[in-house]
Image (cartoon, rainbow, N blue to C red):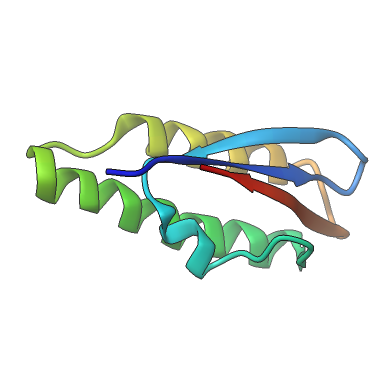
Length: 92
């Protein structure tokens, strides 16, 4: 299963490298795209759940790395009342 990393810039200017066990994240985010924080979290949640379920279908267990990544995104997003998250790059 192809995994990938995606780099995002938060409203405060910090940059995070994020992980997805599947390329499905490309269906939800675009390089160069800017998303309101709540929309970014919603898109990430949906994509990472799908990615985790793809791992479950193939290997018989959910992807804890995808769910951990989602938890980190949700935790960081709590710090921002507004603003946008920018997607800077994908790395396969």
